[in-house]
Structure formats: C-alpha cells, structure tokens
Amino acid sequence: MSAVSLAVAGAGGRMGRALLEAGSADPATTIAAALDVAGSPFAGRDAGELAAGAKGVAVGTDPAAAFAAADVLIDFTRPAGTLAHLAAGVAAGKPLVIGTTGFEPPQLAKIREAAGKVPVVFAPNFAIGVLVMMKLVDMASRALGPAYDVEVFELHHKLKVDAPSGTALKLGEVAAAARGTSLAQDGVYARHGATGERKAGTLGFSVARGGDVIGDHTVFFLGTGERIEITHRSASRATYAQGALRAAKWVVGKPPGLYDMDDVLGLRG
Image (cartoon, rainbow, N blue to C red; front, top):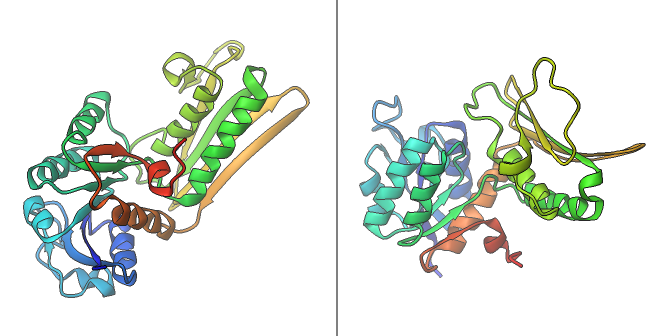
C-alpha cells in the first residue's frame, strides 16, 4: 500500500512543526505540501527549516496547490483559515483533518455543510489519552448523576486565543449528555462578585492561561464528603500529532461525512 501524502496547514506554528516531524517520520505517510498564511516569514522557504524530515518541500500559501499535491490536509490553525482551507478541500474533492478550536455556531454549520461533500475528521483533541478521559467522564457522570456537582478546569499556554478550550467544552458536553442535559441549558462559564449559591445541576468551567503549558484538563465530580478528579496533562504536542496522523490515514478513501476520533478508533457505539 502506498504512503498517504499529507498537506500540513499552519506549518510555521508549533503544532504545524510537530505534524511535519511526525508525518515525515511515519513510514506510512509522506509530506507533500506545507502551507502557511500569506506574509509568513516561512513562505517560500524549505520546510526542512521547520522539521528536518520535511526537507525538499517548499512552504506555500496556496491551499489549492497544497490539495493538488496531497491526499489529505491536516489543519490546526485558526477558524478563518480553516474555513478557507475547507472550501479549497471541497473544490478539490479531498478530505481534511481539523483540530482547530474556537469556532462560532455559523462556522460549525459550514463545516457540517462541507462534510456533506468531502470526508472531514473534526475533533477538539487528538490525544488518545484525552479520548480515554472522555469515556471515563461519561461513565462517572452516568453513575454519579446530578447529585454530584461537575466542574471542568483547563490550563493552556499564554498564546491560546479561545476559552474554554475545545477539549474542555467537549468534556462538559460528555458529562452533561450522560445525565440527560446539555451545556446550552446548564453550562456556567463565568463567576464574579456576589454570584449566590451554586445552582444544582449546573456544569461550571474555569480557565487559566500562562507560560508554555501545552494543555491540562481536569473534570471534578464533587459530592458530599468526597470528590473524584479525572485529569489529563499533555507534555508534548507529539501526542496530538500522532492522533492526527492516525485520522489522516484513516479518512483517505472514506465517503463524505463528518467523523470524529471515535470513528477513527472504532469506538463508535
């Protein structure tokens, strides 16, 4: 079986570099294109300056050219950039793996619309350990029920622009769904001043930003006389890159549709 050829968006960023490294090291994948925004200091330069294994691939700024060269594009950038890449993917009839977070509802609708035309793997987190964490949160929330208060805490580096993180929101969605509610109904995202007592059944979020922390998430289940803490800490972006590569290899050849990592790992249902 021939290697899957990858296009990596946001090549000059930290996650882009991790993807270039991982994709060039995996014998089942090759780096066919590296993409960055127009005006990037890396545009036109050899991607080998970003990741040694990507040597010989020029960093481009044209999504159409990237799709023409590759089987699939991996995108961990910003919502506006991702939507532009998505449009190019639809035009090319090629799949995408999207790890970007911070989308607004109308932008999410565009992703769902595009997934009716090309296969898209879209997930808030590609670390396999986080996927296991979500299963544990689901199990705990079902077993403990609304008698236990749920709080989601997340910590990320100072350059992250959206809050709460996509992973934190997904963890909250999992906990809410497991006890028959939703974040739209019971999510609490800010507390300041005289807030009054905690309303029963709500799911709270708290956020911290600083330094170069890659990503920490904890879900607290707080009952009378006890608490359960389910925590995942990322020490390297390589964990996300490996999960994204797994998704990229899986999605090539799939029919149009909106997939997530449960589909990739065979955990659906």
